[in-house]
Length: 110
Ligand SMILES: [Cu+2]
Image 1 (cartoon, rainbow, N blue to C red):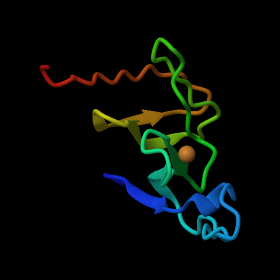
Image 2: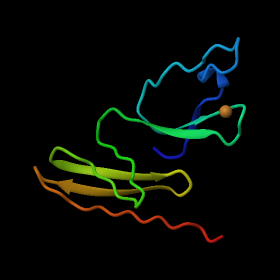
Image 3: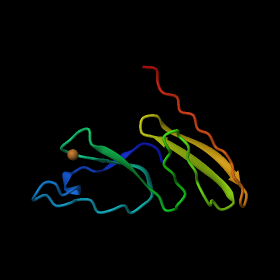
C-alpha cells in the first residue's frame, strides 16, 4: 500500500468537455491512495482511499484522528500524507479499550 496511482486521467470524469465520455469505471479493489487529477488544470488534484472496511479517518486541523468501534485484535495502523509518505504502527486493542497512537512525520530540510 505505498505510492500512488493515477486512476483518472481524463477530464471526462467531470463531464466538463462536451463530446468526451467519462472513462472512470469505479473502484474494484481496496487501494490507498488513488490520485485523481484534472487534465486541464495542473494544480487540480485530490486523493481517494478505497477501503473495504469502515476503520479510517481524516485528521482534524491539529492532526488528531479517531478510529471508533474497532473489534478487539491486533492491527497495523497506517498514516498517510501526500508529501511525507506513510508510517505504520502495530496496535493491539481489547474489547472496549481505548489507546493512543501517535505518528510523527519529519519534513525534509528546505
Ligand atoms: Cu480542472
